Length: 401
Image (spheres, rainbow, N blue to C red):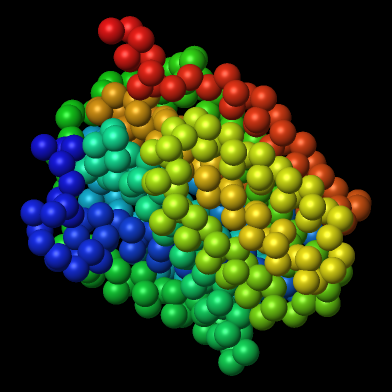
């Protein structure tokens, strides 16, 4: 059945990374390694080519604009034709785009590569739908937390790899990332089975978008995803510039700070989120993460001491409590035949925020260095107000009985 994990105890100590869940986990890690390499390096690289913070924001936005456009489409395609082919094609796209970035020698070529990378990276919602297919509703938050941990691990390996390889050559990290994506595609081709799914529900993209926004549980979560991602991506886009201005960070130091954030996020999402959700429930954990992230962004705006930067950076990882629990709540509120489509809507909201957020953050940073972080803290505070009214889908079902 689609809800039965193929990586459970019946496989007896089979290597996790060769199970379906492990391969999906690795797929997301590889995608995020490429993303993690780019986040700290791309702003400084582009600035060295003469780009302003605003232009850098547009470069970052090109990746996310493609996710906004293609995430719902890939989600629907995975509902109709299967998760496996979408994931395989995505890995190929990630490899090609990584090699293109490695060979790029102009901002225009960087834009082209980032656009392709954004299209292939839009399979994140497909990976989430795959996890929804092979987990029970009781284990859904743990499964989504595992995907969130993959995000954190990508942010450990990617920036660290980028920073260390940049000591040899700026292009080397992207060639390594492309090779890893090709290797991962080969493993997935051989080992990743298709999940059992019900036939895809009828309806176009706009119909699913209207249904998601109108839903009393999903609608507020889509808004939280948009606002929270908008705020957090503004920090990601400008953090390296902040490090250079305030702390005289070079490319390697900025990358290692991102790796530190990734370590904390990976531990939080991979080991702690399950027990915390078991004790508090998804909605309360989501709101806790919102509060901590708002505080971290506010503190980042005023931090001028490099020693104080580390606890603030660790606190930023609290966003890892927000997005996996949002995804789990949306998944629980969606029918089995609409998992890919509804999670695609969520990914589309995230993609739109990542398309707009970097541009706004770059302009705000040019105006005043603390501005992107103060605005981000305010947006997370707004998310808290919305989050307090989010309904728990399981409790609504229980109450209906």
